[in-house]
Image (tube, rainbow, N blue to C red; front, side, top):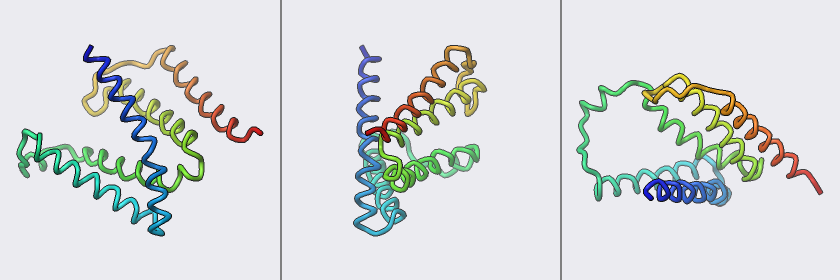
Length: 152
């Protein structure tokens, strides 16, 4: 039952994520700057996560722990900025459906490589024929979405 709840939450977050580029693009147009809209969007995210941490967080901030982290943990923050900027700048050019199908394809390819090599302390889950077939189907889906957007 808990697995179903996680799946429903994941789908709900996916639906929420689909709103972000469209809403942020409207903000960028109104502000006259994609970068300023990104700053505003990420500032709201930062404030909300700080409030959530204070309300339900169990850990205290210890600077010594931060200095012991591997250097590559900053990739998470860099990825967040790239996702927000791409959503604001690229999604309006491609259309949301194509933007997200390409994002999902990239996520699947990247996560397959991470699983295969066990990068970033992930469990090793080797690439196999079925995974390759699934990835190829995602690429085919991206192509269908792109070609479908040009049909009469």
